[in-house]
Amino acid sequence: MTTVSSGAAVVADAVIPAPVETEPGEGVLDLATVTVDAPDAVLARLAGELLVAAGAVVADAGAPVVLLLDPAAGPEAAQSTERYTLTVTPDGVTVAAPGRAGLLHGVRTLRQLVNARRGETGGPVEVGAVVVRDAPRYPWRGLSLDVVRHWFGPADLRAVVDLVGSYKMNRLHLHLSDDQGWRLEIPSRPALTEKSSQGAVSGATGGFLTADEYRELQEYAAEREVVIVPEIDVPGHVNAATHAYGELMPSGEPTDAYDGIEVGFSKLHLDLPATEPFLRDVFTDVARMTLGPWVHFGGDEVLVMQPEEFGRFVVLCQEIVTAAGKTPVAWQEAAGSAHGDQAAVAALAASGAAPAPGAAEAPGADGPSLVEPGTVLQYWDTRPDPAPFVRAAQAGARFVMSPADRAYLDMKYTPEHPLGQQWAAFVELHDSYDWDPARLVEGLPESAIEGVSAAIWTETLASRADLFSMLLPRLAAVAETAWSQPGAKDWESFRARVAVEAATWRRDGDAYHPTPQIDW
Ligand code: TNX
Image 1 (cartoon, protein in one colour):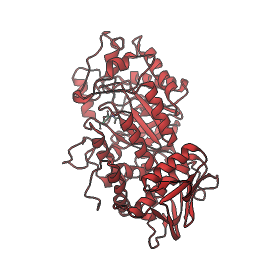
Image 2 (cartoon, rainbow, N blue to C red):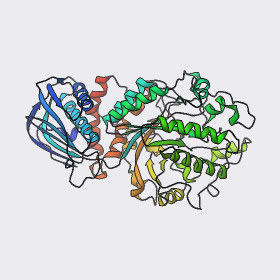
Image 3 (spheres, rainbow, N blue to C red):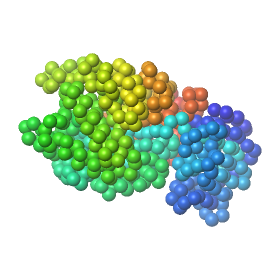
Image 4 (cartoon, protein in one colour):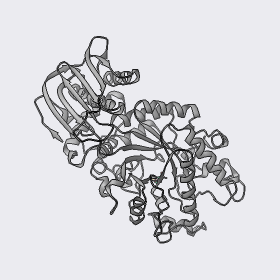
């Protein structure tokens, strides 16, 4: 980070994720009253809202905040379409960017600069003169959110969109089906939500997005340059589906509803006549209802299926999603890796279930990869042998990195933490900050890495406060790992910036965990 500090300039102490380049100037701009000028009315409204949140008033005659499209904006040589240049002088603000994402990012940076000067007690709404030139390291910077184990409805989801957007993250991946519930209306398969949407873990109340609510959420996110990535998890994690449709079971009988938190016990059966039509109906509907280019078909933790059948599911789901016009996304197992927790696999096999995949016999383990070029694999379990991932990358797969011991924000901060799980690690703020996505998987070329996603599973998280207290402050750490170049990251600087940003969380009433790693 080429940051030069000067007097009151607090750029280096304010902006998360750390920008590429900042150059403090002379003087201060009063932003108590602003006039926003933007290429379209939506951008003008959103920029106004961000500045109002920072304490400004939007009026016809205030300090000019001008958003303008400019292909030359951003750091020299930056290629990302999300790059921007923010210029503050004592006379006004200009945000220049080649596209609307960069314009929003510039305003998000400005919001943090104002917040940093304003502090807790509501000091003057102003910003020091500065030029910030910025661009992301990776194109995919996201959060994966489980809305099955506990249900989070449209208002919570909009709050999450705002949160991820504020740290310049641009994907919200929603885990919409699992053993405990089905959370998205599927017009061709109405029983999924009629029969399987009301449950959740430990008898909690479920819910689902209607097709209209799903569209509205995607539009809300798209305005903020956040793409919703829907996940329907198959061929495991499917008890909500087999509860709704008995034809998906060899017995023809629907399975019982499930409100526990075990994983890996349920599965579809590819050789039943009902299975492929079910997959085609569901994924074709989801693709039709989805504005963004991706559909996630899951593929994780099928602990009770033969590798050969699992491989055929992977091939079929890629084909269906692609035929529906979307790019497939799947968990890392689709590369043919073994499940990392061999003890769990053995226990399930011993319980009478079918033998589970082992590393040697997993599909694609030593033959050609089953993954098609362009398919996005989400890496989460750091235990398996990396060879299948390297082969998938050679076959053209793209990788989104969600290492559970760093980026799973449902992991407890410490052994004493009241919420969360601990199977992967205790993940304190420093753990979620101090890692490099390009150095996780031995032999995986950096060019195969599409980006980074934090993930939060909600077995133990029942309210928005639970959720946010696990996300904050760690989401900010993952956001910086996804956006900022390794050389721009600095733990001490990050600690200071988190303490500054916390004023915003307190003002907005957002729950966060007051980790002792920060001088709050
Ligand atoms: C593993 S991560 C899962 C989820 C659980 C999570 C809990 C992944 C692809 N599968 O089903 O909710 O652990 O941390």
